[in-house]
Image 1 (cartoon, rainbow, N blue to C red):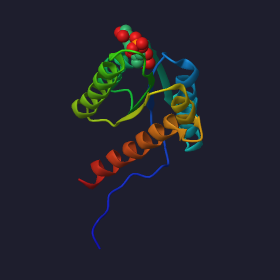
Image 2 (image 1 turned 60 degrees about the vertical axis):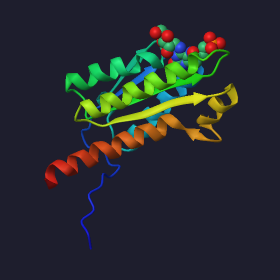
Image 3 (image 1 turned 60 degrees about the horizontal axis):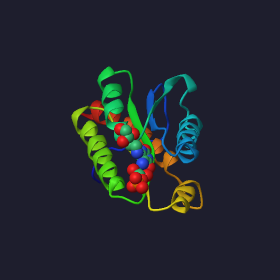
Image 4 (image 1 turned 30 degrees about the vertical axis):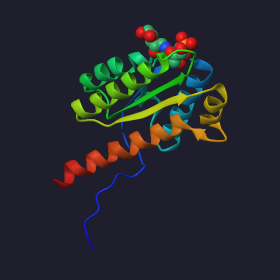
Length: 158
Ligand SMILES: Nc1c(NC[C@H](O)[C@H](O)[C@H](O)CO)[nH]c(=O)[nH]c1=O
Ligand SMILES: CC(=O)[C@@H](O)COP(=O)(O)O
């Protein structure tokens, strides 16, 4: 039987940074509350969750990098809501925010999870921020928690 190294979903003393864009805050606030609720329900202490709010998704990577650089967190959760408008602006922000978050994940030795909604319309945002399609903030928080534990397992198994 091969050795399987994986992270569980029990948080003991793990510290999380939530980096969340304010744009479309009727939805992004729901992603934040979903993420916080998921972490607390899995044993994370309220005091071990720090929420950074930035203007929009374009700024997410900059803040995530600063949080990673600080060394204060075991994982970073990036949240935002992009809703397509009438120009290509959406595409540029979505691609840059995604690229930037991925770069932070690669440049720093801590997990960075992705909870950015990229929606064509309001209904898609409604569905993905706590209704029929779930809450992407919850998903991103649980991914960050699992990855933080996986990284810890990898360190001890090396
Ligand atoms: N249209 C959306 C934006 N636009 C703002 C940019 O993210 C950025 O804050 C601005 O260009 C200043 O640098 N941001 C979102 O998060 N969601 C949108 O739908
Ligand atoms: C995602 C956006 O940047 C978008 O909301 C901007 O709308 P528009 O393309 O109509 O300027």
